[in-house]
Length: 273
Image 1 (tube, helix red, strand yellow):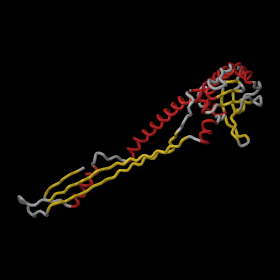
Image 2 (cartoon, helix red, strand yellow):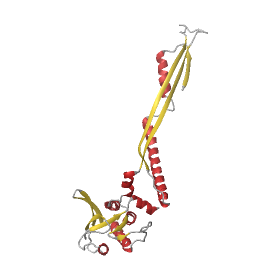
Image 3 (cartoon, rainbow, N blue to C red):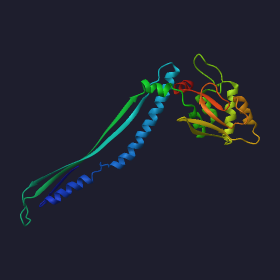
Image 4 (cartoon, rainbow, N blue to C red):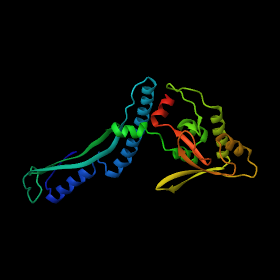
């Protein structure tokens, strides 16, 4: 911003005040809160879109036998600085006490500008080694599927997506040498559990047993529940039991267990592919 003033007198105090006014009234100035409101949403949208694009690309890679690659941003640092610069140049001579035609005059030139510097730093971390093995190839804990159902997701969709088998009843496999259709009894089980879920008769809780968190499936006992009786028969549960320990495995070791053989994230992506 440039301003030029000419006249007979111009005190230093007035000149300094004009410099400050020129800088404060500059139209290109922005403060921190405004930048934060703009950039926070923008960065969030960019991360969300890039994550979805990366996941879709990896599904396509798996579809054609390629290796998935995950590159996750671990930190985003946006450094914004506003720099104010100003300069004042005064020229001329001291005017006469009484204004006269042709008397010498004094003048001043004001130079001011705002400079906004934005230096974002994004750090990426590739998912490799032990992190890749733990995140992609390790089967999900069995209680995760029940937590999804507890949160309101349809149990049919959860079990058919996250499980290989349930108490020995095989789910569908779409890939590999073990490709096969789902056991009709598996489909029947998840359908009955979906009906019980919609009726509000299924709940889960975590219990401490030998320093480990063990999930317990609770099915509310009704006076006349043919669906529950059918579910007991399909899963081999004891007739008088309504609480079942959730364990990882292909088959239960006791009458009051729900054995879930869960998939890994890599297996789930393969199924989607």
